[in-house]
Length: 416
Ligand code: FA5
Ligand code: MG
Image (cartoon, rainbow, N blue to C red):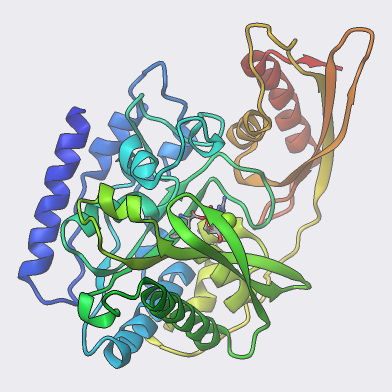
């Protein structure tokens, strides 16, 4: 609770700073990154955040000039400001991009109607610091706080953290941009909730479809109905990329209870959350999400000058495609009802901890149950590939051995 009080105070002062200065001004660096990192590593029975993740807190790739995430962030912000000028009689979006990624369970889940037993908040999916505080899993975690302080039109970017699968478009640290608009009474139709809802939905879709066209030109896209506990109705937008539909955002009309939790009962509006890496991958043809974290010159020099260029599109030229190499590991899961519980995300995390960014993909390729013993076997195929150089066999073998040991030590599985 102490941390929360601190955080609320720091947000308060950021908002004060923000309102008292020019609307377009970005909030200055607002949180003590080193302090947070120290805090995140303090032992606590509920702390399941490994140091490899804490290391990435505060890297803030989306704030680095000419980083592809910064380029796309600025393009989206510019597009939205233009849209707002045309559509909302000169109102502007308030822009946030450095609110602390450490948030409370209440803001991240409770306020947003995520049920207590929902998987997204379980320790198999979320990095907890202690029983109250966690690394935000989405930028929606700031909705009720900002709406509650009368911020009625905003864009908010930040790093998000999830224990997740391993492949070319999932990474445990990624970036989202949240957009929220709370409508003024004069923009809606008093006494006609249906008409008002239609106005809100049409505005949301026209902004986002316009954004996709602005970024990608003539790309194929589709809207799909979705479910989020904090919006109703909810929609997802997919963009056709490299022969597949790639989900790039979630959105919808903000649920009345969320508005109530923000202390603004009766107000209405929309919200969306964009995956910045996914949009960037489509825009610049970036084939693997790990590349966003590389220090390799050959990656970064391709984007020089683009942060200040509102339109130029380049197609990323892979500087190498080093051969990948795969290794399998198979094991018996811990006995059901025994002391150790098991979740697939635990396997992914051990792999990430041991092998870091050398892992390109992990696939469960075989699963069966031995009817006599009642035990279940899993077999995973791990693809290794370095983004910047070739890997040697010895190097991979060494990692694979360590990985096997760690799986046994940390998950209580039995190697086959
Ligand atoms: C959300 O996070 C909702 N908060 C979005 C939202 C906001 C809905 C406001 C309604 C109103 P979702 O879990 O689908 O939704 O994530 C949104 C986007 O984040 C995805 O479309 C994807 O582009 C990106 N994303 C999610 N997980 C990862 C990951 N592990 N790696 C990279 N990108 C990810
Ligand atoms: Mg989704």
